[in-house]
Length: 250
Image 1 (cartoon, rainbow, N blue to C red):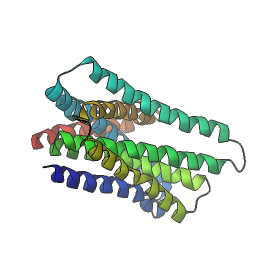
Image 2: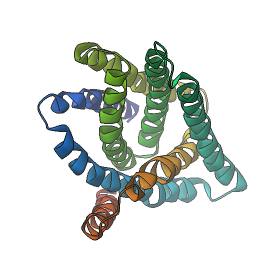
Image 3: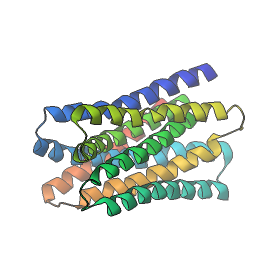
């Protein structure tokens, strides 16, 4: 059984890592068309992250261990952890802007922040498969959906920071493979710390809530037209419904 968990986890984080190569599509796609389409992927991703957090991860943790105050504490810690990561990135961005020759340092900071984020994603995926294969699959699906728009954005940041397309692709992939290390740590530590998912999964829930609520949903409010709002609502609901459909696997 544990060998199956390892296999599923490693294949999943490899898939997540290769999502970083999505920047390849930007080589041939018109930037205006890409941006117009990307916002609907963002809304779909937000719905999927909320759906995974509340329909898959939380019920599994509560069902196995009951809902204790520590569960709420770890969820809040997950939110706090992602909040700190984003603050560090924004702090560096604030002190780099407007200074010639310093934009490149922000691109490097973005890589560091993205690498840490991907490491956490690996931890989350590994811990999810420790709960069950279906939960791990659903979590991987949600992470991939979230990673696609993020990786396209990260690729743009690196280009803006002075990287060539080839170097941007290479370093973006390099930061993405930290997800593999995260999964290794999660699965290895589980052999020494019993029920590691009891605190990692609630932290994942906090992280998903933060990403969806703080990073993705605000993007949906930046431009408003009735048509765009309706499509965003539909794709947001579809993201949740996909997670509902995945419950049948369980």
